[in-house]
Length: 455
Ligand SMILES: [Zn+2]
Image (tube, rainbow, N blue to C red; front, side, top):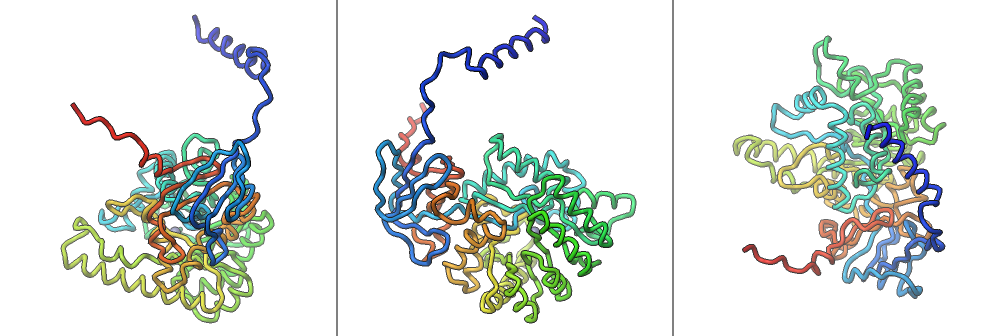
């Protein structure tokens, strides 16, 4: 049989199936599955006081009701999770799923440029699928991918997850970051400078800035990421204002990477939606940030990783120096975060994980980074809000995710212990559900029959 006639057979089968002629008339299709999730405690994404004896009623992929000791309607499947804290699925507002730099191999900067030179966007999208799966298993059900994803590799991954081709978190994708001349590359030779446009859209002048936003929106971006300063060049307030104006016209939030006093001032003046990192944060930007409701995504590192540099990164002396620098950076980050919070700036959690940590999954490192502001003295409830309700608001997804309330998507994570008392509980994930689908259920592992011993 030739290929052509096979195609004809498949076409006929397809038409019959889709028209319902091939099968006898089916009974009325049942409604969406009804599920009740029970847990000892529940943090809803906002309330500082946890709900006890919690019940979440789900229908399909939506939450129908949340309450204490709710009556469970007949015909509902019950998932009793026991002595755990149930929370909204976690949100990382600053992720780089398509980049996983291996430290120590010629230095972080040169490794990143080598990766971009050597890896196709397609290959990086597949890497992103692995990173995404690891995030989901750690309880992160939504991320904003803020660039370093080749030419629209983040959109490919977002769409593949949406279509169910691969399992991963819901993605808000920013596509290539807009940047001043040079992107975030070190100085490279003129013949290979075209590589920069594989990773960044460099803009000079308000017309190019406007065009870059329109291109991103046309490509399918959910958000706009802008690198305000890159060590060589700055974007001007005029360029930033046009970027914000265009993005907001299309209801896209603008995330601004800033590291200097001048760049954070320009970004705040232009009215961006979030300051990423804010490695330099003069006091005079705090009041306007509060007034303009600009979030700080502080991206502080967890102090404990400073003592975990593996031997392959150098001899004991080198590692001691690295640890010291790491601690200094972390402590500075804590100081900024505390100062911002005290001034009334709202926090949204972002991991900025883009590198491999030996022995840990991307999900494990991400959750540690998301909760690191707790080490700065931010109260656990505010840390938890920064990775749930606040993060959802920054992503303009607060109607869908970020809190456990009727009408929201069924994105749930359950952890052992009580993260409102000890954020380390977030590392003990017992259950994850995304969009009504169970991704992790540690109870099943406990119940699974013991494997027969090898013969
Ligand atoms: Zn980043």
